[in-house]
Length: 197
Image 1 (cartoon, rainbow, N blue to C red):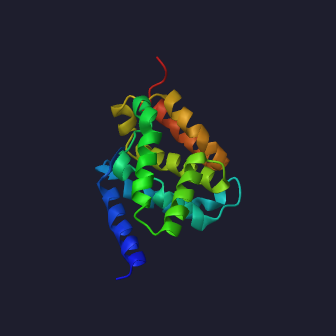
Image 2: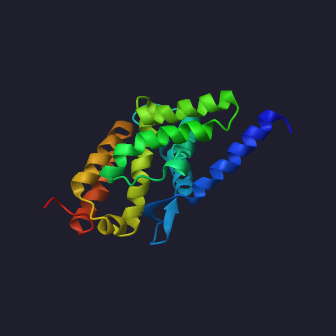
């Protein structure tokens, strides 16, 4: 086997570990916690289906690969819960170290390409990154809504925290932000999301 193919296969096996990184969000209908790979797959399918709602035209292939790789770094860095202020303080350093180790398994050209796509997502400056961010916000919101706000209730998440995160959805999709807003309001009314004390 040549070196390039071996490196590619090593990376492919390494990212299988993403299936072992469990998130705080449960599967729809009250199932178990979802893992990072399921989250990424779900986002990629959502992005394809909902692309017409992006605020700007997007390269859907780039959006989908960005969805699929945006959490690969969590193999080493772990999942930082969306509302974990303490974890957020060290997240970038943990993810930067993971990005270097994991993507370095690839041939140099592919390492550079995927790291650039990951950085594009992190910097949130392109239409594609903004739309992926909208998917990253909408996907767990849909699951939480399907579970009667179970994860929000368990973590005592407030409306202020949720809106603080979902304002980024608006930059990627005004229409999907309106949808999110409606779901958030419904869950506040149903007592699933705490209002400020």
